[in-house]
Length: 603
Image (tube, rainbow, N blue to C red; front, top):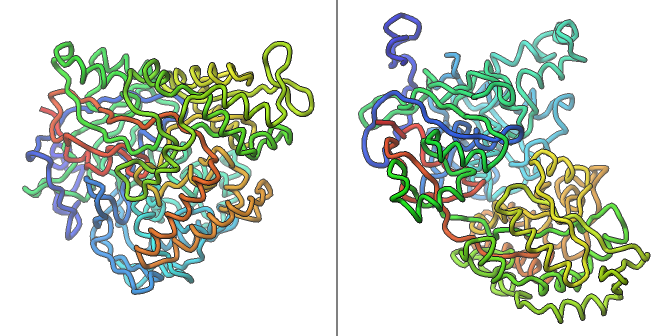
């Protein structure tokens, strides 16, 4: 594909397209062959996470494939001072954006000075979650060297930077974006208005997307935006179907033979309505390798390989802490429901009302074991109390607790709130598999007098409701089973994904947020500990603080769990090669990106 363009004079020779010191990628099994199309299925609407996980993970540093450490990436090397306040990165000389323009320290400085610190474009330092709200500066030490300087120790900065959101610092091509920025183009406002925009910031958002995090669908709408990824979108996400991506001629990684990666010429994402539709695409032979959305079908292939001779599976080690983290909205807009939900006794009663073994047998094909929301047994942070308390199926105890709370049973069997209204709630999730779980949960909760309606929402609707605090109870996969420090979203209100207390999470992220609410004392203690933890250079002190956070989570019991997820599987066609036999499955490790899809090949 690229050789023909080079021969025709449309591209420079490959040596001129590579940096001085390319990243050397070791293939899983063998050096590959060029060509072919990698086919996947993505959901219409909010499924940009599939793009991040397959073509969007190129940070200064990244996780190694085993998720046991951090390796250099865009940065050729890095150093950290003794008290974890200065992180220095030496960039690879000669890396180029996908349009051939050089990538240098100036691109990182443009992001920091002209986007992150520009109040017209962002809301300040909180626009980059990786900074954890800490004040920091980025200094250019040379054309290919930058330093991040923090006022206070930031002991986990490397771990944050290796996570998907760490891509922010290396996502802004200054040469492309400066013409849209008022500080570099005095005519930016007039040109923006002539193009139909309110002002220059709106046009900047149009050509780049929303600054702050790569985890936003607006970041995938402009196929002309130069990137550093292995493949380039050739269509507009949410518009073009199928959505396609092609090899980046300036990708800066090679195999042991010195051949430029990626091997695969093209990626094609077939756009469908649902996870079930995605699995049907796979059943019909139009998925070559995929983890996301494939769990049910992958288990079918794993259990009955003779029925699928062209397919095989790999293990996706589930790092979630639960199949369904049940989050009552402790910040509910209705003060009566808020008071009920915030009563720990109510949460204990709901937990005892669940026959988890029956749910596992019926909704999860008998796979897994009863488990609350806590670090997995494989984690060094495993807390037995957090994992196992209130698991006994005891509907009589559940009813007794609810009676003790004064929630009387009405003539129709539904309990009444203190204001005399029926105790009715919506229990929401996304996806058929989890919907089967929550339908069972709803049945058990109804049996003790709670009027529960289970809903399987479209992903965008699910998140939109939670962004404005219009939700009752949420069920989602429990991230943070292994990446406990990186993803503590179910252990205390950490981000918008802490669905049990989004208003308290807003206070943690930004106390001045008008939608924020001050948390209770125990939760503030957790937040204080986490702030201290991130400032610690000592790994042992960080571990000690994290364990205290988890113990408070156990004592407060803010989220209810159903079961511990078993090992999952992904699928791939036998024509796909260099797929690892085992890989973690997580958002913090954006599966399968750290396994280097650029070294996958088709034969």
